Image 1 (tube, rainbow, N blue to C red):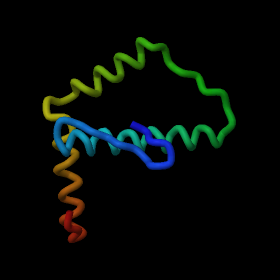
Image 2 (image 1 turned 60 degrees about the horizontal axis):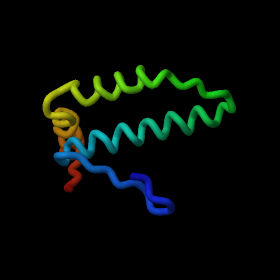
Image 3 (image 1 turned 135 degrees about the vertical axis):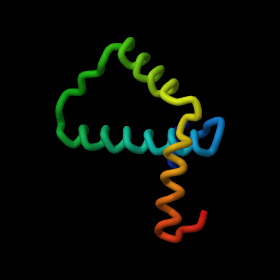
Length: 83
């Protein structure tokens, strides 16, 4: 959920799923910002393509985001950063 003047609230069934959604939302926002800087017309794919992409993402793995979460924890450990 995007909150005007307050940022974003992201949720998931687990902490690693929530982090997965947050990371990919940030990447999507960066992509859109970079695209908007080019002043070109945006051509959106069909609704069917978007729905299939969402379905593919959500069924990619059973424990969505767990492998990513483990990788992020290893990065934090490598740099001696505590949560």
